[in-house]
Image 1: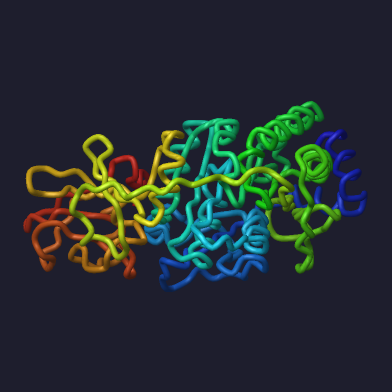
Image 2: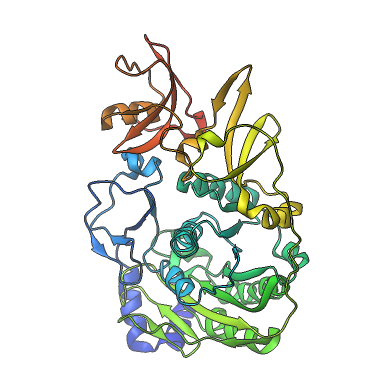
Length: 439
């Protein structure tokens, strides 16, 4: 650690706490995951519960997630435990507008907070919510889209636009979560490059960029809407300094920090989680409520007719084509989805598949979707060895399974489709999702 970093850390948290943090940063990083409440499985990984996340687990060591079929089924998301605190703050200040709740996860890749928000929204709102997950960098947006597909919630839309593009949706979002790019001090134990790149100049640049992002997206927040601001850094300027700036410059009141848990430190504006004081790599989180502004006037939109795939779903969906692929979108969100379509989303709803003659070749994402009807396809339960063989795209035979399209499951959770020909199976898992390491 540089002297400049040590000085800035001591200024932020005091010399004694700074020494505790520095000692923790010299040790190994923590390992934690968050379970998917909509995809229960057994046995649940052993570990201590994360105090601020009902589905969070702290693991004693890092297993091989790649060789766990439940990981590929989207049964959990590997996420830093301190980053889960953002989800807790989100749940504390979730509004109840009496219509589908509209939420933006502004800097969403790789998807940890997106999937946490989606689980919380589904628990509170049922089907009545739209979550837009945005990532400006296109390569990272692809990773985000893949992780959203594994999670399987059809109410999540993935976009890849600059934060300023959302200003056209004035007053649209009830909540905006802005986990803004930062100087990355919370990444030091996981990424040696982050430590090498840190400098006071980096803090200067990040502070200015964070303010630009907040100012650009602010018009999209509804009157009385909530902005959750977070970083994975420890210094004052990128944390409490920018919260105070947003309140004074943009027109907001700072909401009371969540101070219920031992370990996290309040600065009166937000809460700082520091390695050595809490499990995890570090996070800062605060909430602000917007004062003033104009509400979005949502136009009525009729669901677009098309397709005949409702039998595949357990709730009403609307079908349209994107190229050769049929896509299903929640019928109850027709107006909300129409409003964001100008952003040219990378993902909406769930891909159903491609029609070839009278047959449907189902998309891999369909298998993972929460809205897939239990009886949509014949299901075949397989053991771990066979599940991994499928995920490795090895040759498979399923002599006891029905012929034709089959949904392969492990522990009751769908993994993907095969077409059983009797003497062999055509594996429909996309090559880009196969396990590449040796089994």
